[in-house]
Length: 123
Image 1 (tube, rainbow, N blue to C red):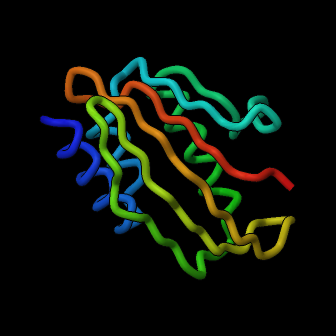
Image 2 (image 1 turned 180 degrees about the vertical axis):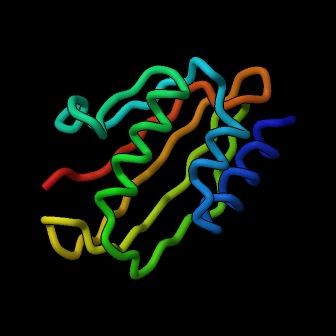
């Protein structure tokens, strides 16, 4: 599977809200997930390995009270890398309504995502 194929599949699944399915299908078992430095610790911080990434996703989903809108851009692909812009307008438990914009960068090796890194402002 080419990087472009992986990128398009990830975008399609994310647009359907199938984040965990995307991780099971497209991520390497030893993949890593990197958050901005201010968010690196804690249950939704950096994670190593697919099991930890799935757990991180569960923590995030549990924190979401209601999704008002979710958008994922078309991917930009360069060799073994791709990026997408994501926008989530959601009500978060204990935090209220949050409008999140981020750039997500993925590294693909041997047809699997081996790294994801998120860039967003932390307020």
